[in-house]
Every structure is written in C-alpha cells, then in structure tokens.
Length: 317
Length: 305
Image (cartoon, rainbow over all chains, first blue to last red):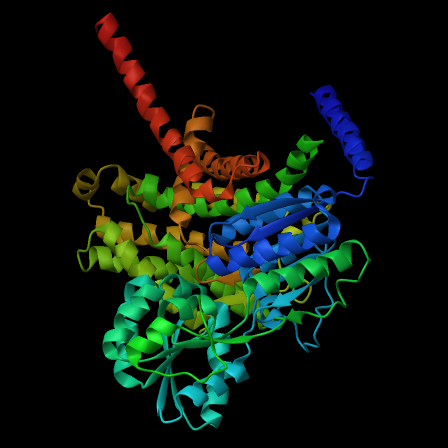
C-alpha cells in the first residue's frame, strides 16, 4: 500500500514539473465564473473576453468560462477548480461568484464585475476605492443621482414613487436605499415594494401601481428576467416605470439612464491586461465604475402611455 | 498535466462534500429513519447560514454561532412538525410551507439584506475554503472529519437509547409503534427537529466555508442531501451494516457527489448542462437498487422457488 502511494505521489510530482515548464510561454489562463445565465451578465463576460483577446491576441490567452447556473454551492466548486488549476487570473461575474472566489484564494488575482457594492460584498470597513486584497474589478452601480434627476425631469408632478425590487438580491436593496435619499430630496414620497420571486411579482406590482404614481425598478437581475409580468400590470394601470438598466427598460420601462454591461466587462478586460502583463498590483487597483451612461427611452411604451421625452433621449433598439 | 488539476481540486471537493455530508446526515434522519420526505431543509440550511453570518460578523465566537444555528434549526423543524402533527397537513406540504416561511425569516435574520459576507481575514471562522490545500490543522478537512465523527457517535448513542429505538420504530412501522404505546406524533416532531437542527448546523459551517450567507444559498439542497444518502447506500451499503456505518456511508456519499461534480467540471462539459447532469446522476443511483431487485426476481423466477 505504501509503495503504491509513493508511486502515485512521485507520478504527481513528475506531472507537476511538466506543467511547470509548459507555463513558460506567455499563454495566460483566465478562469471566468459567472453566477447565472442572464442577458446582462452574459454581455459582461463577452465584453471581458473580447477586451482581453484583443489586447493579448487569441493565441496568448485561454478562457475557462464556467456558469454556476444560479447555485452558490456550484460557485464554490468552480472556484475550487480554478484555484487548483492555478489559473493566472479569475474573473468573477456577480456578487456570490466574487464571494466564493474571495473565500477560495488569497494569491490569484480576482477581478469582479456586475458587483454593485464591493465594500458590502467583501465586508470591508473604511472603503477607500480599492480593496487591499487580491481583488479589484468594475462596479455596476448605475448613476443613481442621474436616475433620480431623470425621474424628476419626466414626472415632476408625481407625488409618490414605488420602488419595486426583489428581496433575494443584495444589490437591489442598496440601490433602493440610495435612490430614496435622492428622490426624497426632490420632495417625492417613496415606498419600497419587495417581491420574492416570479410568483408574487404580479400582485406586488399591482399593489405598487394602486398606491403610486410612478414606479422605479433598480438594476435587479430577477426583475430583469420577468419584465413581461411587470409590463402586464403597469400598462393596464397606466403607470410608467423608470428602469435602472436598459434590459428592464426594454421590457417594461419608459426610460432609463443605463450603463452597458458589455462596456463594463470590456473595462474589466482592460484591467485584467494591466494585472497580467503590466504587473499592476490588484490590491491597490481602484475599483472602476461604468465608463458612460446614456439616456434612453422605450418608444413603444412611451407611445402607449402617452409620454413624450426630451430630445436628448435615445430610443432603445 | 491536466490530471494534476483534477488531483489539486480533490481537497476542495472533499471538504465541500464533508460539509454537505453533515447536512445529508440530517436528511437521512427524516428520509430513512422517519420515512418522511422533509423539504424544510432548503430553508433551514440557509437559516443556519444566516444565523452564523450575522453572529460571526457581530464578533461572537463561531462555536457559539454554530450552536445557535443548531438551536434555531430545531425551531424550524418544530414548525414543520407542528404543521404536520397538530394541523394534520401532509409532511411534504408542511415542509414546503416552512421552507416558504423561512425565506422571509432568513431575510429578517440578516436585517433585510439578501446576502451577508463573512470576511475570512476579519473574523475568526472555524473553516474556510482558503485553507483547503494547507498542510496543517487549519485545513477544513481536519475539523470537518472530527465534527462528522462526533455527530455520528452522538446520533449512534441517541438512536441506541430507548427513546431512539422508539423513534426508529415510528419510521419503520407507525401502527406497530403506536400499538407498543409509542407516541408517534411526538416522535415525528422530535425527528424533524433533530434533522433540521443538524441541517442548520451544516448551513452554518457552509457559510463559513464559502465566506457568505445568501437567502438563496440552499435552493435545491434537498436534492444534494438525498443524492448523498442514496449514493452512499448504493456504493458503500455492502460495507457497513451497523447504524453508525450507515451514517458514514451518507457522509461519503456527499463527498462522492462533489468529486463527481468536480470531475464533470474538469472534463470541460458545458456548465449550462450542470443541473441536467446532476439530475441524471441522482436518477441513475436511485435506479440501481431497483434494477438489482429486478435482476434478483428474474433469477428466482428462472430457477423456481
């Protein structure tokens, strides 16, 4: 038994040596862990892959893209796979993915994306823009002040704003709290309406429509998946929805000040290049926000509800 | 050299399997001993995680946090037990009702936040996936092995007592147990409480291991728990006949489940198909005992009795 064991150990060592020498040429391995199949997250991953491929050339980078299918236990399994494969860099797409990777390694640089608030996600006190850990990345926090301004610009006479979000999403509550502050400053009365999943979404939305003049939906992955359900309630009720991002606006909103998840992923890819090739220190690399936000509107929805938007809004295709 | 990656991934898979093995032992109590399919675990595992995360991040000793998670899990089991026995709701529905209620309760525990991070560098935790390849006592596998052993010994002792035997009788044949003067309704409640206490305890360990608690973290946990119970029985059933041996099988079943997952990922299969593969693996392991039975019957029929 001991002999067999020692042979196995020796074999492993040999194999490890081979893999060690093979890593000499500049082919970087990058593990990508995405939480769930989702339009926005898919776009971010695509942007990341495109940016890094463009910068390094397709021959110099290998992507191992894994999707946890929405299951956080899978995140831990996949993160473990990346660490044991000793990838050069991990890109974690969405909050639980980032947390699982952060728990798995302190050595391999991790870049997050589609994460709204790094300080809360990683439990860091005294947030100063960078994590001080082996982690950096891009933050998908929409321009909240801009969105509050937009809501005021479109609906100055509204009295009460309903904030519709999913209670299972850590980032949504954060956004709701932030925008409540800005909207209250404009004199609106704000009331949060949390739903748990698609089953109670319609009734919660109905409730919000009955009580409020305008609805606001933050960047919420669950809401993004069920925009039709929201639209089916808000259109008959004649209540407009201001959305946190383009995907939600396309389905059920009238207007949004949206960031592009593709651009966000692309920016993350450029950061990855800095870390891999130029040796940037990931612990001091500041977390970046979305490059630029665009005022967009949903032409069909505006026509249905009889709303005219100012000239500087772009129609969503 | 690809194989090295797989070998490297094994410690992580084993420790994750051991955490879920604790949970699977809880499932074993309801599914095998009480003969009740209890779906509460999808909620109570996250409850344990939530309790542990909130207590640890407010600076309380992790051992106390884990103990509290166990106690809160007992309450979750009590809720299902009362739905089932005092209100006459079928066991499966009772479990589903509690699971639904626990979603809101878990959010309340975490102060309305869906996700609470437990930063390993900031708080003292019992286990973390960070040390999974460390060659020291800090390696989560060490503590998990000890905890599994202690849990199995405790259960072995408990189910060997007079009351434990009465519980086992309740699951084996309710009518017969009642005829022996056993209060089967009370027994079912006790079994459900114990099971959910253990599941909640494993949720507390999982939160520390993965570094966060999330209201959705145990969605579908029952499938992993049942898979572990069944895989353990099919693969190691022949080796262990005793009660404690069967509990070891369950824990090993969870480890095998995660080793298979790791191999599936290593093979580079599309992760979009992960859930389907999980379902297939469990289905095959469920079918094996049935097919074995069929084969034996055929043999008997051929030979004649």
